[in-house]
Amino acid sequence: MPDSRSTPPRGNTPTQDPRAALDALLAGSAGGTLRRALWLDAVDQMLRPHLPPGLPAHARLANIRGDKLVFVVDSPVWHAKLRLAAPALVDAAHSIGLEVTSVIVKTTPDPLRPALPDGSSHTPMSATARAELAAALALLRPRPVEDESTGRPSGRKKRGT
Image: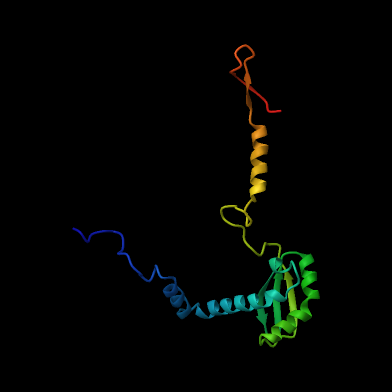
């Protein structure tokens, strides 16, 4: 029976096309919530350049509630810096068409950006750092001791110096 395979035929089936899946989500009962989340993310990206240096990695727009921008930060230090930047953020929001008058800042103990699942860091190790690490590891490896009578390695190990 040639057509009795358990795998579906290849091609752009609805489960393989991300646009079709997104369209199905937007058309469903959760569509309004998803559209609002996408809109808030777009507004966050437009306001991010107006944040003080260093703050974008520690703050994000969480909501727009009436005439208030609601931001979430990950420590009290960033909370204070964002409060000081509130007038500039309100002006920036006006420039993109939002009718807001104030900024609310909330602090969360959780990180705003989740850690990568594989535990890798965001920045790769430089070539210099990699070479220095290899040199340090080489110093920690045991070296064979030479037999004084033959000049060849003996089987005993000697600690690196």
